[in-house]
Image (tube, rainbow, N blue to C red):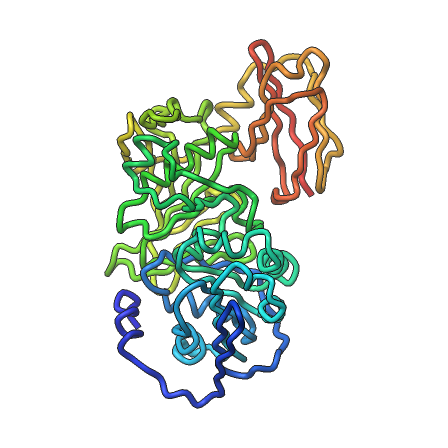
Length: 443
């Protein structure tokens, strides 16, 4: 089925159900169930599916359902009805035990034992579109949030979402609690009243750590506002965050190894996904990111590095989130902003920053150390007496990406590295008179 006319067909078509279906009404929710209401156990795989917002991509949704082992699917919503039940259970050709749509009508639904039980028993959870401000208001800091994180990190089942459901998947979320933002607003004043974010406060998806997503990317053009989001994150949190974005009929499906496959109907349609990172060439923070002033983030027209991937029906092209540099079928671009004006440049080349920016710097005598090495969960960093509190400590990946900036307040820094993938990382300490880099291994 052509996904670009999928909404129209769903509205016009009906299915005569042969399977048992039931509607349950709670005080604060409505549940629509189709299929077997008994719980089953199935072998699942920890994958994510992110969709741009206009309609579900059928091929990507089949990919998602196939990783649920044919078990029970729960769809979470805060508005609407049971339109997902027919679509998931009978129209895609994947055999499932059941599909249940739970529509939460108020924040108190998040404490309902029935909803928590159904989520705990699920082999796949899909978060529908709506308003991420409502989602956060209803689910944040509740048993629903705890259960979703249990399903992602312990039970390890497929979890995905479309539109607002995709918007809440990253560890950094544009909350929309004061209203939406368009690109000109974000670029002309990155501290406008609607630019509100939460960080590490909702879903804990390991492969989406320090990622902020955006949707409906081509209608309207949201590239500028996404750059504004990343500028604010860099300025406020001191991290070089990442962005993942989808055009309206595009989907990104991420497997357990961090391979992100892009589904769409390219070349018939302009279906693209965008993987955005702050350029690792130092310095890389915005030149001007101040309340009431237009954003400037130029850095020699290389402020941001983007891998733009066309989505195909087969999901043929991909990008690897485990290193943020390996991709197939896409093209590299640079994005930058001058005085509130967004620019994009094709034919960009990724930089090898460890070689050009770190290892060639003149190093002083040793005053930086860390232990244990290798480390698993926590890393202790020691600074000598004369070096501490005067400079900046950076955590850097092997491709030169600055993952964290720290201004030490004492001679010992305890760094939580649970979210890092296994591998080699660098610690760099710089001040007006000193520079040193050491490496450590994350197990």
